[in-house]
Amino acid sequence: MELPNWIKIKEVKDKKFQHLLETQLDKGESSAIALAMETENPLIIIDENKARQFAKKLDLRITGTLGILIYAKNKGVIKDIEPIITKLLATDFRISKKLVDLMLELNIDLM
Image (cartoon, rainbow, N blue to C red; front, side, top):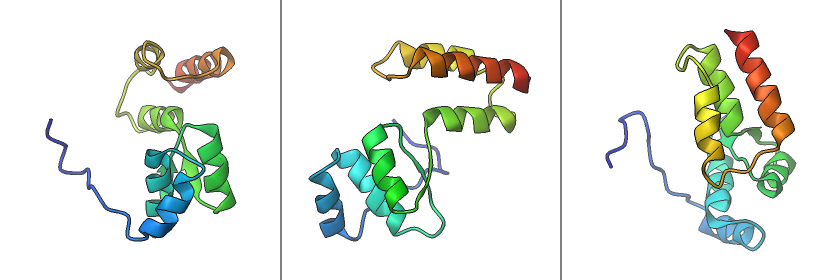
């Protein structure tokens, strides 16, 4: 699958820091945090709570998949978040019912 031209793949320079993070977090989350630390004014997209806590301790700006959906909705990139949330829930994406209900409420309010 070919990626859109606005997606850039970058390698982490500080592999030692990444490997240190990997003692506590998954490889993907570790590389995302390590890369964010090397980037000017990053916004890191992390859903897993433990990784979010690590990122917060490093003073990184954080959002999650649902935050991206709200942003895309506000920018008019997507019209409705409900079908996307439904698709996410059909995968192994874990989210509380309370948060789903809040997201759907926000979806209505943003229309």
